[in-house]
Every structure is written in C-alpha cells, then in structure tokens.
Amino acid sequence: MKFDLSGEDRKRMDEHLEKIMERTYHMIGYPLSRDFDYSEMNPVMRYALNNIGDPRIESTSVLSTKQEENEVVDFFARLFRAPENNYWGYVTNGGTEGNLYALYLARELYPEAMVYYSEATHYSVQKNLHLLRMDSIVIRTQPNGEMDYDDLREVLSQQRHRPAVVFSNIGTTMTEAKDNVATIKQVLKEQAIRQHYIHSDAALAGIYTALLEPHHPFDFADGADSIAISGHKFIGSPIPCGLVVVKKNYKDRIGQLVPYIGTLDTTITGSRNGHTPWFMWYAIKKWGIEGFKYRAEQSLELAKYTKEKLVEMGWKAWANPNAITVVIAKPHESLIAKWQLATEGDIAHIICMPGVTKDQIDAFLKDMKQHYGNRVSAISMS
Ligand SMILES: *Cc1c(COP(=O)(O)O)cnc(C)c1O
Image (cartoon, rainbow, N blue to C red; front, side):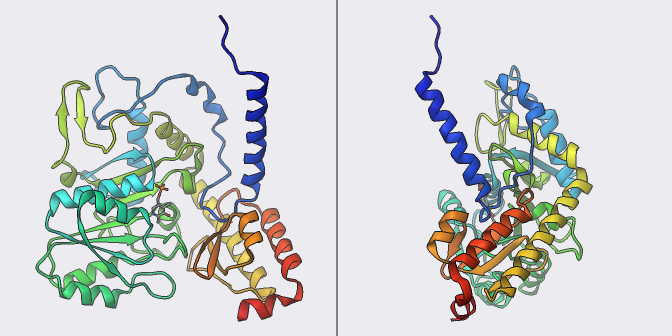
C-alpha cells in the first residue's frame, strides 16, 4: 500500500500557501518578524525532539535540545542582567506561558499577594490571574499607555498589609509603552511594602530595549524578579515560542521529581518543544548582540519614516521613545482589513518589525492617499 495526498489536497495546500504569502506581505499591524530563515535546519524537522521537564536536568530517554535551550537561557539572562549564579529559565510556547509561569512563581512565594497591572496590559494576563485565582487591581494608564504611578501609589497605600506583585509592561500591546521598573520599585519602597515581586512582560520589546540607549529600567539589575519574552515576535520563528527567566532561589520552591521521566517537573507543560529552542539558538548564533541591535535600528528608522510620512499627509501618528510601533488615528475598515492593522477604540497601529520593508510602507501610504485624497487633514483632525 502506498499512502499519499490526492492531487486535490496538493492543490489546496498550494492555494493556502499562496494566500499566506500574500497575507504576509500585507501584514504590517502585528508584531511578527519576517526576516528569519531556518532552512538550514530543515533536516531537523525529520526528528522527534522533546525537552520534557527541567531544562537543566536531562531526562532519561528523550531526544532533546536542552543544551541549546540552556545556552539560549544563558544568553538572555546575561542580556537582562540576571544575578550571575542565581537565575533559571526555559523556552516556553510564547509570552503568555512565560507570564503565567512568573505569576505562578509569585503566587507560590506570596500566596496572599495582590497583583497590580495597568489597563494597557495584554488580554491574556487576566486569564492567567483567573487560572491562578490571584486577586488583582487594575491601575490607570497615562495617555501614552504607560502605567500611572500616582494611581499605583494611591492604590498601594490602601493595600499595605498585603504582599504586592506588580506586573509591568515593557512594550504594551497597543502603543508599545514601557513601564518604568525603577519607578515602580521606588513606589513600593515609599509604601514600605517589603514583600514584593516585579515581573516584566517584555514579549515584544525586551530584546531591543536591553540594547538601545538611553537605558530603560526594566531588567533584573533595575529590580525585576522575572522577565518573559516572545520568540516569534522580534527574533522571528515559524512556530510560536518564548522565554522566561526568573531568580533561581524562587524557582527552587516549586517542581517535584517525577520518576517516570527522571527529571524535575518545573515547567508549565509536560512535553515541551525541542525544535523552537534550537531555532532560538540558531538565531542568537547568527545575529548575536550586534545583529539584534542592527535589526532594531533598522526597525526604528522605518518607524520614524512611517510616522513622518503620515504626519506630512495630515494623518495623526505618533510613537513612544525607542518604539517600533507607530500609533495612528484609525483609518477606514478597508485599509485595516487589507493591511491587517490592529485597532482599539479610535486608534490603530503599524509595527515596523524586522523584515517589513519601506516598499510595504510606501504601498500602504499610497493606499491611504488613494482612499482619502485631499480629505486627509480634515478627517484625522476631527
Ligand atoms: C504578544 C504579547 C503577549 C503574549 O505573547 P504570546 O507570545 O502571543 O503568547 C503578552 N504580552 C505582551 C505585551 C505582548 O505583546
């Protein structure tokens, strides 16, 4: 017997692929890098890999890429200035899992804690808190999307009897605003809340925020207890992935030895992807610090260009400092659909991810002009 796809099924695959290529060209609203190429790793796709359990402990009989995974963790721990002999981390399925793990850790440390997060926080965080049954209070944001520290101060002053877990955003989903971890730490100190935990959700912006000047306070040396990033966003990957780094002495409190797999069950899921750590390893070996920095600078330049061109044509557009996200007044539905712009209320955004080209931005600008003609100023100012 020979089993294979029918001609019809092949055709469907080809058609779908073609559509993906077209949609990828027109995607400037979501934070996925497009400039990755892992084709050198194609042979690896023939093998079943599984990093089940703790990355620092090989399991009994599983083909894994834990060595590469640990090198990835080491690389980012150093970049995020984690305490040299006191960090631990693993490659996750994405930013959400990293955030969930960090909150889980915080809850194990402080079961009575109150969690504080700003209005601009990613939608997945509420679900995480619900899963963990943690109490939380939403903090107001400033107009740029950054946490309102006065509101944090006031709310904290009424909860001084409870340990505090502050969930900070290093690049909010809509405006790429960055909360200031040093300021948060200062506010906690003012309120004399000694039992506290600060997590940095740096899904999109963590890597380049660590590389750009002036330094934005968000890492371990600035006061964070854990940091999570996404791997399929700035680094770029065909399969969603991410990374979480925490302080090791906190992590040592959770995880139990499972004889069946011969390793510590310290992560959220059981079986873990063995391919994505290898992709991330490949990316850090290929780009390195210099490559990541170069890509970030290219993105910033394109964001500046995009913003300036829009403002020139009378369209409302702005960006936070060192952000590759350009926030714009929401354009017509047809433009949002074609260019897959994310929207919220009366704003939308364009994210100049690595791999987005000036040609794409110019094509978008041309569509804008075609749609609005001379009416641009009148519409975006109203
Ligand atoms: C994308 C994003 C997440 C979720 O990350 P996933 O990798 O999609 O799970 C969480 N927080 C922020 C700020 C994000 O931008």
